[in-house]
Length: 302
Image 1 (cartoon, helix red, strand yellow):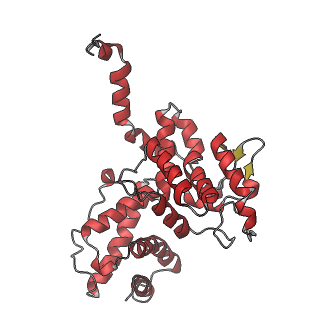
Image 2 (image 1 turned 45 degrees about the vertical axis):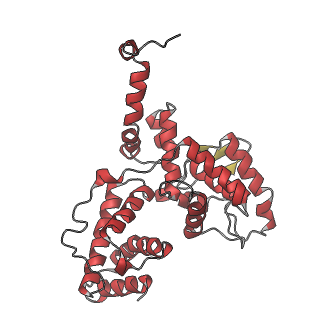
Image 3 (image 1 turned 120 degrees about the horizontal axis):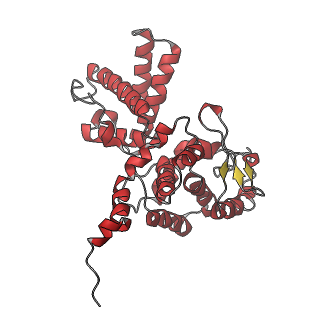
């Protein structure tokens, strides 16, 4: 059976044998559909996945879902139930007794790109993309504006105020927020919207389109990002750019509460994950600038 067929079989099992409500089954499907897409994208059969590869998937989940402990734990639970079903059907070779038993939350810190890696991605787009204006605009929305992938793909023309340099994405809970439109992002998004985008004869008012003039799908965006980050020695997801935006803003001295507003986090505790990422940077800054640390440095010769 194909990966999608196994998922459909499991969802039917939840409804018929477990008698779960349609709403509960839908929540399982949302979590596990992400898993199936991930397996399909890498050309893997769910039956053949190793525990190490499953660990890689959950690392990806944490990165893609803003390192929400609740989201990671939910994916653990959904995935564990699915694997138990596959084990029962003799379609999965590993025991689930210890597999994924305890979410190692600390293991799933979000990935962050360096500034040099970000620059190399824009360069890569310029070198190989057939639609470089669109793809540059997409990465600008993810990195320069810090948008979630769903927000970037759903952003409408009317959500961008070029004159006053604001964008108003609609985030989780249908909440709208104001995000400043950066200078480079403004120039690159305008270059896409006033040029190649019009040539596609748009069939929707979303800013980012596929080659048929329709709203780009998440999977379409995922594949583009995999192409433009293939030269990097790390796994990059659409959400990696948002993590990088947040981390680089904090490194530059942005107040945590301001960053919270820009990211659209309802609670500052969600934003505080980025302070953990910056611990090493804080140590380096302390050693560089604190007077007592400076006294310990050897004077340069000459």
